[in-house]
Amino acid sequence: MVQAQTLRLILDEVKSLETLPQVALRVMALSQDEDLVPRDLVEVIQTDAGLTAKILKLVNSAYYGFRREIASLPEAGNLLGTAKLISLVLTSCSARYFRHYGAQSGDAARRMWERSLSSALAAGLLSRARGGVERERAYTAGLLANVGQLVMARFLPEAEAELRSAISAGSPRLAAEEQVLAAVNPAASESRLAIPVDAPAGQYQIEAGLYLLETMTRLPAAGPDGGPLPGEVVQLGTVEVQD
Image (cartoon, rainbow, N blue to C red; front, side):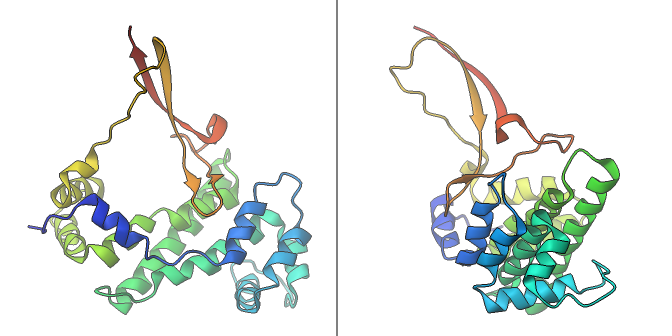
């Protein structure tokens, strides 16, 4: 049995995860600009020599299949466009989270990174085949879909081991996660919404949205069909306040 830990302790530990580089945060902020052009992104990205080199290496990989070598960031931006350039920045910077850390072995970190890249590529291909979602947005969602597993591997190694054992025994991953995380912290599966005592009587629609902490930029939200949700929020239901 996993030793019980409070949710607050885990959240405090999670704060020690490295933040994305300032260049990546600036790129994510610029991505919200409807009038964004590749030149705007290039001006930010080229201030980081290491990131520029990584992006050029990815651009010249077999995945993009250009017939000639792309030797400069402006050239890459013009060929790829803003959406693909943003995805490359996120791919390059997200790799830092998949390094060997604490109880997590180097092989496990590499496998997790490979799974994330595979999910990103698969999501991009599915979006192109099905339509309805921008390919680069689907790619980003696939890349970061399993970021919660990093928290498990870094801060809850015992829970991660129990999770793998449950999955090996045939339990679906979602059911195994609910079982294991509930054992870690029974309160983690519950949440409460405080309604102001002076709220006027009537029905209220409950909405949920996510924000990037560093910039407080609203993050995209998608429905079951993969399409974007109005206002980038998830409708949770209604509550009624009575006199």
